[in-house]
Length: 113
Image (tube, rainbow, N blue to C red):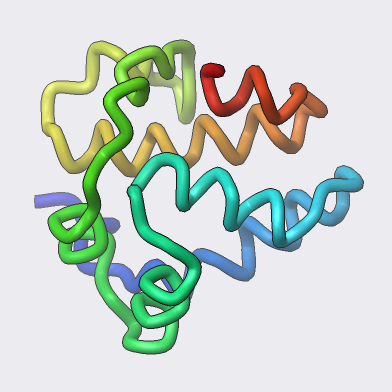
């Protein structure tokens, strides 16, 4: 089991926000991407962040977007679509979406619309 599985989403969330704000994106855009990927509404997302939910429990509770499988490419040196562990793949989906936002990709493209 990877160490990231037991890390709280709330401990990584501020790093996502910082990365995006440095690139001219917003926390609201980050939240939109997380809601799209997980199926959480804003209240559910806030509850998970306040509760310190681990990545493992966060994605266990998520209703993964059916279009998530369209997320492809390289993140942290690995092709997202070839990651075998389902939980790690979901975590990397989130990383990839954050990266695409930070690189200035249009929200409609990030959300695979």
